[in-house]
Image (tube, rainbow, N blue to C red; front, side, top):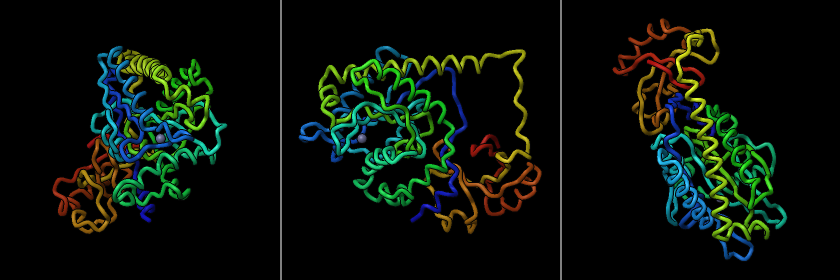
Length: 353
Ligand SMILES: [Zn+2]
């Protein structure tokens, strides 16, 4: 219903504020509470229990081996957490990385193996089926239609919002997903189904590299044997921990390079006004909740757009090629919005005042 509104939304991206180290990791055990996730054919084993066990083991390894990393869990027990809240936890903690752990299922007992997803548009029906199943959880949430802007997990049309995503973190997310799949190949679930893209609501609003990993199929006998044992779960946690270590090392070596001053380093030119993805605008407010276009707060300026950044909805007016043009308008705008100021928007990110 409100999908149109989503068309105008500049997607949750945040200016990269990477400091030297990878400091915070958010671990998300899928499902929980009244949401069991998928189940084994005999209904004896539930996704929510298996992923919680794996996540707790994984967190423990990382806490021991990387005392410099703060590990945040979206849940540590059997409770229901809305999908949007999981992403919010990661955003609030300014996490550097987000891992959502799940178990796969299929009406057929044949499919088996692991696969890791990053946010994107599904290219196959099979990927769509996985995201549809994992997104269906929102139907258990109150007021899900408003919260997810009219998103219907079963309607392929709804997934158009994901194709509009300008995700600043795709590259890093895919890199991490590859590390995970490489590690999984060492077993115990050796069969790898690869790195894929699909529209997962839990990854939609995270503002850091994020993956959703399906560690195996509860509906496949071979995978099931591994997934339900303590030993199998420990080994999977070890693979994920090793993938994390690889990613952390890679991340930190990159950041060290980025930060080291170099005489030959070229200074990046100021954004040129002519570049199509850079423009000037007037920010009128930053609020915690999205406003409707007829909200009194917008004082009749239904044409205001917003960028979700640093956990807030930053509303702005206009689109100007130069700072001068924006500044000319500023005094008019300030009659209604006293605190308004000029911003530069580059690739959907607000860069400066
Ligand atoms: Zn799941």
